Image (cartoon, rainbow, N blue to C red; front, side, top):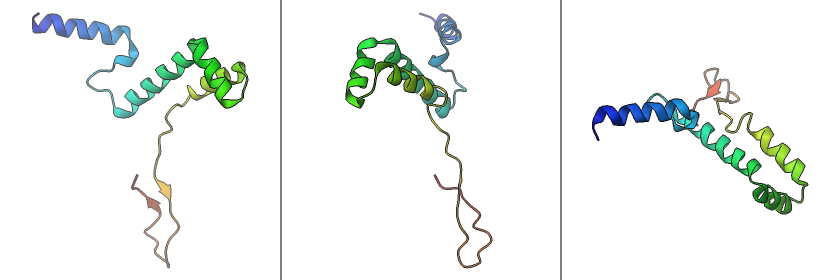
Length: 98
């Protein structure tokens, strides 16, 4: 199989399926796609939803609703957290370490 055929097949796969990613896909985008695919699989397979409902002591409709709600923002992006200034230090406004 030559290189051109392989690249064209890869481009076709990436255009057909959003979750396969590409060279410019960030780690966050890839992670969001993985989480959404997992949540969609849990909603789509009734036996998984029933198992989760039993484990969480909730109805299947409530579990399905919770899973669909998580699909909106499956991975919350964490930004810098505010830090209180220490002893009059005005430069410690934000903590940029994650």
